[in-house]
Each structure stands twice: as structure tokens, then as C-alpha cells.
Length: 133
Image 1 (spheres, rainbow, N blue to C red):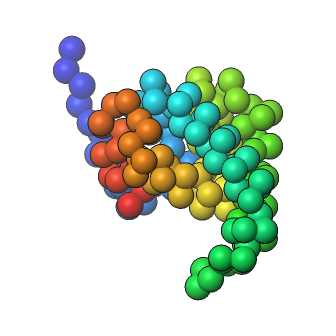
Image 2: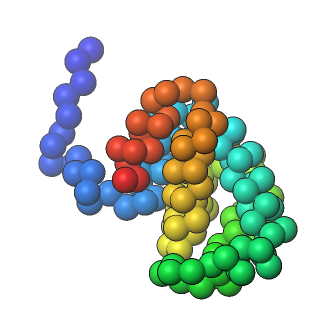
């Protein structure tokens, strides 16, 4: 069977929302998602345990450290509550972690995750670069 793309329903990459990009990422590289969720949870905990240190060194940012801590708390809460769903459902992963301001924290953590070479599949790094850069 030959699959044909329907260009009328395909969106260009620059018109995809963060939620749509995250669904695509999850669908393409689902095997990488559980390890990323574990990393995201650990990083949120790390940030929240070092609030004074992070706030003292915070400078020249688009927002203050308190907003960053709120995003970390929100991420930690969502991972704790929906961890299984985030790992196996593209919709849950995307809607919980990439909707609204949550995307700021999660996209940053994705870029840190690939910068630290925590992934197993080299395509994961290319996918993050392609979708979120």
C-alpha cells in the first residue's frame, strides 16, 4: 500500500503549536519518552531544592526566578500525578507538559537533556533540534 500525503491537511512546521510538536515527538520516538520523564522529574526536584542558590545567581533573564520555580512546581506536580500516562500517551504528554507556559520549562529541559547526551537514540537529538529550535 502506498501512502500519499494530503498537503491540504498537513501543517507546515512553523505553524505547529508546541502541543502538536510534542505529540509528533512522542509518536516518533516513544522509546525515549520514559527516560526523559525521569530526567524532567529529577531536574524539577533539583531546581526546587536549590531555590536560594538559583535566585542569587539569576540575572538578565526574561522573567524572574519565582516564575521559573512555579514552572518547576507545575512540572513536578504533573509528572507525579500523570507519570504513566505521560510515558505512554502522546496526548497526555503533549497537553500536560507543552501547553501554555509549561512549554517554556519542558522545552528548556528537552534541550538540556539532549545537550547532556542523556538519550539513547541519536534521532532524539535531531528531532528536538528540528521541532523546537
